[in-house]
Length: 301
Image (cartoon, rainbow, N blue to C red; front, top):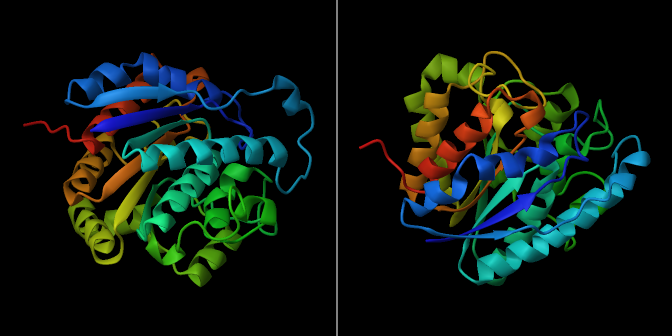
């Protein structure tokens, strides 16, 4: 498989900075040799340059740093559309989760031309389904998925091209455990599917895995996996901007990636919110490499 890695050192979307160094941390943790060892070819792109002066003015308090985020994500969307057209597997490394705006816009633009139905597996402690009307922080990394589903500010919903990038009926969350009141109401209205940490505790992870894989097999032609490292318990991934206790284990996350590979439906992925400033001996970045490897065909035996 031809894997095209996009490094997106964008952390305007979060309150705590440092995830802009996440892509290089993952690269230095051995991503390329790990994937090449599985028989893949790997190419790299560095699509944006961040102007430090842009940090001086956050702008709209309900959508901070809107202009630089939209600019960067529009450029990423163009790059991803070209990558898909070239029959590559785009692997996007963040940065904070606001990069999803560009990722899904590029994928949607490419897939709509080919009449391919897109689904999104959102592995995250948070839902990122706020809008400017519900956000408690004004951080766009908490609004990115709602905007991609067509809810929120026009500047966000219309990144790269006007309108919805993914049908919320084809969005599945796994590992959610910190949802804001306003976004929960919008998620129920939109009709997304959620497997929270409570669901995992009640049903057991194998049962959740079966439901997740069946969800996509019944609905879509291609799946994008968006993996936020804060879905993991901090004992396994300390280097994230919003660490929360009682998260997924490394074993659960690795198995989820392996099972998603086995569906044959995953054609793109992104890994976000690796923050080396908060990490311990780069262990979060190293786990990100292992997650990518499992999603791209690695097995224990």
